[in-house]
Length: 304
Length: 277
Image 1 (cartoon, rainbow over the protein chains, first blue to last red):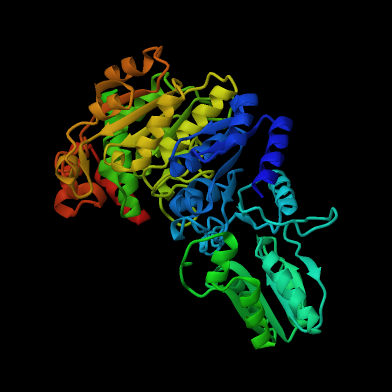
Image 2: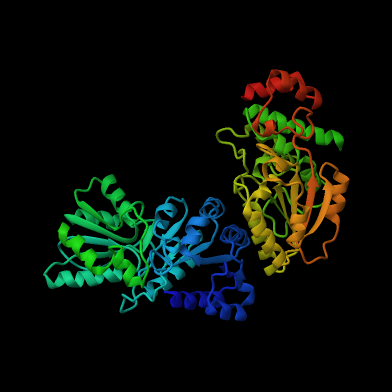
């Protein structure tokens, strides 16, 4: 997703000189290239995320559109109060781009994992939360965030995530996208973990089991209408996320089911109130923590 | 001018008294600083058009000094003085900490310490990028300087050569639980700011002439300017001065007499306040 991000942000910066890339020593060679071409639009704040987040509110107050980019965990956790007081409380037009959603910093361990970020951030008023599933969807998320006049958090993978869309498609904030059709239940999924799920679906299809897969790329504001409809039409629904099952997508689905008195069963798949353990490639760490296609297959199969 | 400063302190107290609670000592220590900025042609502003292009920016990072700011903003015409009577009451725009965008003249919400200077550096940087001449002033508490972001922001401001930024520190040397020296071993922040590369100007924070002279000095340094304003926490009422107990407190009956005498408050004014409680 990183390449898609760099390409999209670079084009936006060339189009609109008010778009400012705010780094906290978190850039790559590409950022350095952009900085050489557009020096007044790249600010490296050094290793000081909190200062960067609050300063970005100051930049936004003057009509700038800061894209605040750093490791997802440092942004969501360390800078939470700054996101709350300086950005969300005052509805500043700042885009927070968290690089390394879920377990994608797979070799660095739990300090670098973002597996509780949705839980804490979705409680913040005024904040739109986008969680794109693929590089193409990330591009669309960045462009959509630019169009929104207000704070947006984008949860972005960084492990050569696969593309899931073959053709161009319509991406509308807060409009879920049906990826597969089926008649035995629905799986709501967010982020690039959808790749594991699509492998699982293929395994299930071979056994004659079909499920509807709904890509929830906007975690806030939620597409409640679609979730209500899907839940009403499914005896069982699953949620899948690279996140603690407390406070994430699954909890949001549970809210919708409970507050609309829908008669269905929800199985939440994610980290079971634990920090992820182990090190390895992205695939390996997902397997170690029960978030690979086989583990997902087993949970779905056991509950159908 | 002395009368005017005393009157501001009196109004701060009466506003706090009618709300039953507020940070009066922290407001008392910054009266002269705010008076100088707003009444001695330092800040460029238009009270009838608080968001006017080309204005200078004042950010009260020590948000708990809000009562002093509100008095001065009302005094120069940002809003009607009658609004002060609603302070901290349901429906009021004026809370214990200033909240954006409700209060004309307040640029950002503060209250949690260690935010305002970072915000101010963002404003100053944007002004520089756009080639604008406006200036940014940010007032911090000296206790607040224990927050790490103050130093992250200072480092950034120096590196980015934000010479359009003035960092003012209200050095009253007292925080909630005691003196800065007792709590954190801090005698002065002068060497700290110098070590971060700032030019530091130290003044008597209760001397309007001295403050004015310092603020009016042209900054040719390509650096943010730091003004350490030596003040007395609770300045203006003897029992409040230099006493940490008064950080978040109003007087009892006996103590009230001292306020009444030293701030020239009439019985009618106290009665008026009591009606508002």
